[in-house]
Image 1 (tube, rainbow, N blue to C red):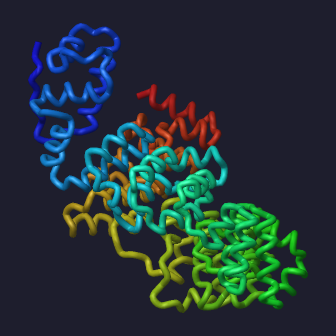
Image 2 (image 1 turned 30 degrees about the vertical axis):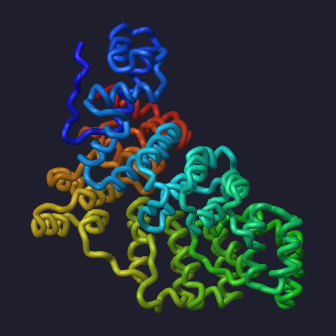
Image 3 (image 1 turned 180 degrees about the vertical axis):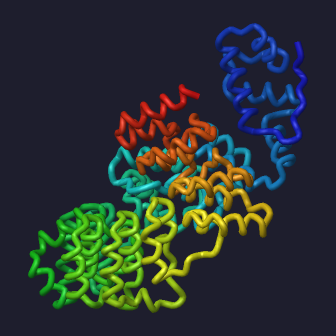
Amino acid sequence: MTTSRSLPARPSLASLRKQARKLARDVAAGDAAAIARARVHLPAVDLPLSRRHAQLVLAREYGFAGWRDLTAEVSRRLGDDLEWAAAQARRVIHDNDVATLKDLLMECPALLSWQGHDDEGGLLGIATSSYGDSFDPDRERQFTRAACAEVLIDAGAVVMPSVCEGLLQSRARGLLRLFERKDLLPRSLRFLSALGDLDAVRVALDEQGHDLTAVNDAFMVACRFEHEAVASLLLDCAIALDSELGARVDAVGRRDFVRHLMAERALEFVRAAPADPWQAFVMEQVMRAVQEGDLTPFIRMLQQEPWLLGDDHVGLQVGAVERATLRDRGEFIDALLDLDPALLRHQPSPRSKAIEFAFTYARPHLVPRLTRIWPMPDDLPHAAGLGNLPRVKQWLDEGGTAEQHVLDTALAWSVINRHFDVADVLLAHGADINTRWSSHEPASLLHELVFQENYDSMRFLIDRGIDMTIRDYRWNATAAGWARYGAKDEKMARWLEEAERGR
């Protein structure tokens, strides 16, 4: 029996862990060869093997004194120890693999202070960040990783302010309570309001109740977390400091005003900056009109509240254009631009995904409206999205080869917008038909097309050999699974399954 092994030049720690787990399972199942391997290195240890003992056996088979020495050699061979370990940890957190996360933290304690990129908030930020709104407990379980977050907290992970702020944005109530139990939340008025702690809010108001900005902010947080009693208390305090606000709110009715802001979520994902509760109330109605396709009240509110068109609220104007693009409501973009908003004159042009949305969600007919605000980028993906075959060929001829992600984005936009002649050229130049490009998280192009009910584009990809077994990053589902369980479209799911069987 061979008990000596050699590490490959680029070893995988995940593979080594799997080998150790398999050894432990085989020993527990009574496999004679596995038991013999264990006895060579641990003759006196009681069976079955613990996970730690299985790792020790494997490490010694590879010629190392222990698991820590083996993993150190893996890190050395892979180069940047911390970045490599962080990449491993990111995947482990996604998989909600608490045991492996604990192993990684033991092997690389520096992970506890690693901060990542773009203000991620380190591993704790990755564990607590949410794909979407997490107010519903089921969605919080799906979108966040509370068990991993608790492991990181107990191990001493650095808690960045952005992590706590993220809990407010995602409305993750379970995580908020976890952070409260661990004494990690600031004792500010806004966090006490998020917790719905009425008595603590009353005490805080004795100290901070003169600060109208803080009170207004806390009121909006209380509405966001649907704590009506706390929100009503804070609104009364704000009105005591601002009589003009009181006159406007009382015309609506205080209870109705609070309940409206608690119920509405139209400002989600909009870079709006309401200065007070009244502005938030009006902005919610504007964005709700866009969502529901109510053009007349949309125009009326913009005319009645001209401050919405000013320099201080360009973020809301951008949000209205983006939401109108997503909902394919060009008439709302026209109506807004006809009122001469500050957005048209803002320099430089404010950051926006409106043009990207037009190509990603098959709305190219909106591009002429959007280019009144933002210039069209002169690059391969945008030329492909427009179906400009001569320009695509020119780009490819001039550049020879493009970076893979650029080719893949161009392919996605050409297929989504049914420019199949362009897509064929891109595939011939190395675009990956099995790319994990996605508008949100890694998935296949077939996944993207499910919710657009774009059978022509799906057929194009199927005919050219796309891998129909690809599973998405979050739900681990195929495109057929998205059709059946996400889009609730059994007909499409069966069509995709028939297409796969037909190949």
